[in-house]
Image 1 (cartoon, one colour):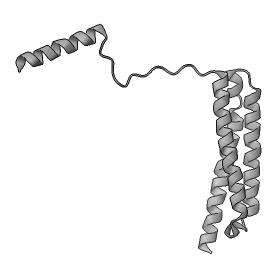
Image 2 (spheres, rainbow, N blue to C red; image 1 turned 90 degrees about the vertical axis):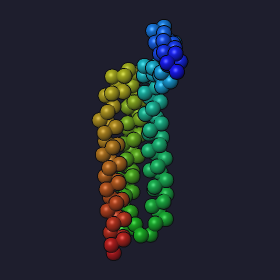
Image 3 (cartoon, helix red, strand yellow; image 1 turned 180 degrees about the vertical axis):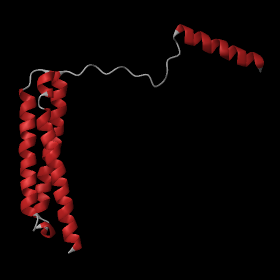
Image 4 (tube, rainbow, N blue to C red; image 1 turned 180 degrees about the horizontal axis):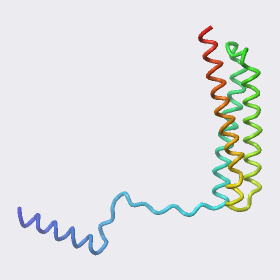
Length: 131
């Protein structure tokens, strides 16, 4: 038993020294982000936001319980859609990473719009269940 254990330690040490023992979780490093990959990521996010908001717009028309808050919610959705389009337009016009980073205020505006929409939607649902 001692011989097997000693042989295992020697072989393990030799493999580690020669570099043959690489961890199983080692991955290749991600390539650096380019302007095009950053634009593609923003386009994906903007498409997702736009699709969700348009679906919410359609569902809102079919919910009579939210009729009282419909005007506010539709205004929130319209503003969020407009700000998402503006964000995408700024990013698409950018030619450098700095230009894409300069569009961050537009991205923050979209986040604020979505937070307001979420709060208004929660409030509208709360008033319909309480009443």
